[in-house]
Image (tube, rainbow, N blue to C red; front, side, top):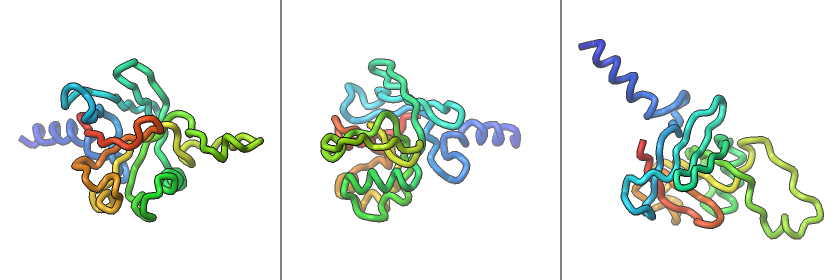
Length: 161
């Protein structure tokens, strides 16, 4: 019986969290704009010290990195979300940061940031309910996950694993 319990724990433990109590990003994700509720939109894979995100529709794969506090703060400020609500968030980001009007008018392109120090084109974020409740755009979500990109904006995501 003890062996069975240890085996089951070993099977499900990776899906709960990584070291440090942060969400384990590895898995499959979907959203409400698909034909079926469990249609997989993204597959997140561990790739050494970072992640790889595969878009199922076209097979496009991108290297992703976990946002550090500075990167989350930059995204939260751009979204004009309440200060402090990003502290408990955990986000993966990939692609180049979308340009702003300031970037477009500048004679000097912005210097690239180290991975994690700023957000890229796309984000997959886990935001616990107490913080989510304080963000108007996320307050009605039933899932702790959202996806953002400049084309689709913010959409609720389900971890399908």
